[in-house]
Image (cartoon, rainbow, N blue to C red):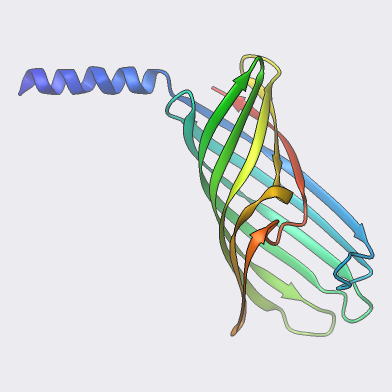
Length: 189
């Protein structure tokens, strides 16, 4: 029994010795004038999304994005504002490494909870549940610092939005993402 415990301890130590913890995040800004869907004259979106993760192998890891997004529409009809708190756990698989570049895909569960408010009206509570596959890449600037980019415009997945008692579901590319490119930095311990 003692030998089994020592063997398991050594295997676990070897497994976790190569593991790496990383922290970072991204800032997003999108300002669209006359969007194609005709929903508003102008839409401004700002996102602040810190991330923390754990690479338990050279090409696999888990992590979570935790942050806020703010959206303001100028539509001349109440000019709605949306504020969301974002929780997005993910599984990351690195499928290619070329020099300092790493290409990966995140299998992500998106949870957003927030409020939708128009002028002279009560705030409406909103929630969004979605999942998808988001491609990304990182470039190692140093041994510990990397620049990362995700292409939300290529996102494939399912999203369900709920505002009070109304529900809206969608499936496809670019599921309810307003900022197509997020760029950020990651520090690896």
